[in-house]
Length: 221
Image (cartoon, rainbow, N blue to C red; front, side, top):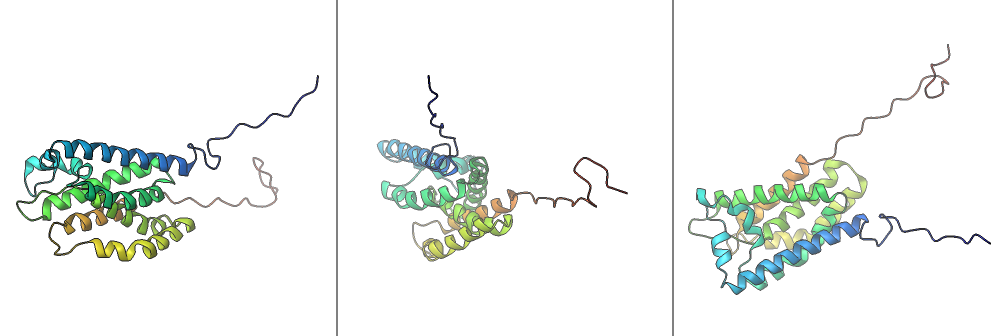
């Protein structure tokens, strides 16, 4: 009998595997977008009653819980379609290092961004949509590299600024009817705050050994 060479099994971090960092990030964002589309189809089927009942009503205590539901609701199919691409692309970049950190960041963005809408939006308005989350991801990516001081993330921060900066500024919507600039600005602030709250801890420098002593042995005298 002869021993034949065995084919090594793929590891979770193998390039292209769903268990790799980019595979996990892409799967997470696909699931998020799928949830948004399912909710939107139900919303459209109910003549957008979900958007009316789950949107944020400014400065009404009964609407504080709507801060959590409003990002999952949209006023039209076109509204969601406009958010889908930047949500997916920015979300993947934000989620690659750590899905857990990404989910915590998203929660911070939703809470801070939604509270900003609740506090500053004009009276008798109803605010829904994930565009505040998009601005939050943008703000998070802008600041994350410089806060964490990781060269690769700094490059991503610069690339995001160059690729999305003009489009995001043009989308803020100051004074534009039907656009919640309050939600966009509050989402941006939420993303930057999340980058500060969730920054990586600084690594302590490793102390250099004195003399010619081997590890675990006392130095020579």
